[in-house]
Amino acid sequence: MTLLVRVAAITAADHFIDITCAHIDSCLWHGQAGLDFARRLAREGARVRVPTTLNVSSLDLLHPGLFRGDARTANSAKQLMDTYVGMGCRPTWTCAPYQLPRRPALGEHIAWAESNAIVFANSVLGARTDRYGDFIDICAALTGRVPYSGLHDPANRRGEMVFRTESLDPRLLAEDTLYPVLGHFIGRECGSAVPVITGLPPATGEDRLKALGAAAASSGAVAMFHAVGVTPEAPDLAAALQSGDAVVVRVDGAVLRSARDELSTAVEGPLIAISLGTPHLSFAEFQHLSALVEGVRFPDHIDVWASTGRDVLRSAREAGLLAPIEAAGVRIVTDTCTYITPILRKTDGIVMTDSAKWAWYAPGNLGVDVVFGSMAECIRSAAAGRIVRDDTLWR
Amino acid sequence: MALIRGTPLVAGTAEGTALVLGQPLSFWGGLDPGTGRIIDARHPQHGETVTGRVLVMPAGRGSSSSTTVIAEAIRLGTAPAAILLARADVIIVVGVLAAADLYGRVVPVVKLPAADLDSIPAGARMDVRLDASIDVTAPA
Image (cartoon, rainbow over all chains, first blue to last red; front, side):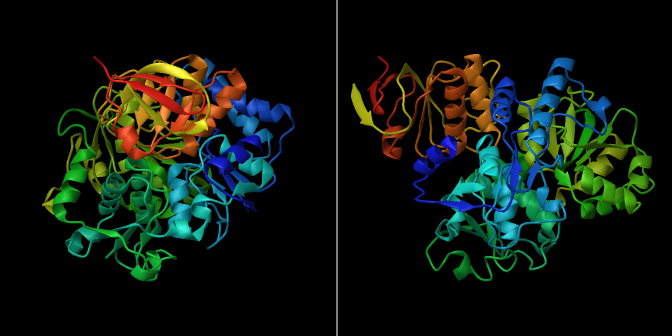
């Protein structure tokens, strides 16, 4: 509570409010400090007061053999996970808590950590969470209270920059791969401001919005966006701007081309792996992947990784989506992700991904080179054993 | 020598040379707490070491995990001597407060007006005082 009061002072909140749920990022291992903090709380008998989900950790408990780090780190990471479960958190181990059955509703106050979950909750669900990080997340879960500030306050949910996509090629707007690139560009341009996007198709699906938000929260500190006619607090531009003014940026093919280029650190070289599922693959993405890999068999020297949450994996398995995916040789990762923990067999080459977030962080975390492409391009490349991308869309 | 005044987000004293970042940095994915080096390959200060420096940056960026990373850097003694920001960043401040509580090591965090932050020359000698006023001595 002391930490929460300090945060309230910094954010100039004048009162606290109740939250209905929390999502904890602190369960991911980054060193002893995280465990020291969790144990300090646990020793005092801490228990969460609201339903609380857990983010990815460093270990895949369903496929423990995948972890290639040292045993001491694995042991510490497991202790950290156990400490949070011991405080009453649900062992969901996913960065996409919005894919779980019970989702926060429009206007509900929640305390979520994990930048992609935050931006999804605020933007797509219309729930209200500030940009919470480690440690403060569990403090909120333990007390059920947060300072009334930041994005809990409707005034701070006002759009501040408008990104106009009307002049984009409709073929590009119809492609999944546009959305992470657009998000990457927007994050670069607007930092921590609330962007408003106009011109997206009204039926833009959740997975596209997930990819857009995750990218904008990686290249920038975006915690909320509006897509006019798509997201719940933006029925029209005036509503998104709360009738205020905003800087307008016209998004054209040229800026997106350079944003796409920025997501790759190499253009050619030996392809060693594919990484899909950052943020965690949804059921619908499993359907897409299942269709893409039909009849495909990847060469032995290329590993194709797909990260997901254990709950989504169960649903995908029950629906029969996994058989073709596993037959093709895709390796499923749950509970964690391939760029935050040592899982890749090799790092001396190019990894291809459909995730702007993975492309942004993996070169620093793992030391790999990365090429960004659509999920279909990733699968085609893996099957061919070399990078295959269609540049015509981006000309 | 110039004196600039900020708002203390975490009060404390520190001395060191200024490491001025050209872009916001996410500590997670951007800082290796084991070495104190900036590992974000796309960051203009990639390869620089933050340890013992007064880190001058407009804002934090990205990941929620930056809280644990800065706490771990403080535990390991690889953290900056102080952090100066133009925007209050709870993700950074909480990590610094938790580390102060757990390990008794205080890294001052000061919010400065953007114009004052921008006026700090790279390599300047910095003296951060308890009241969040800062003596800035430009490098010779």
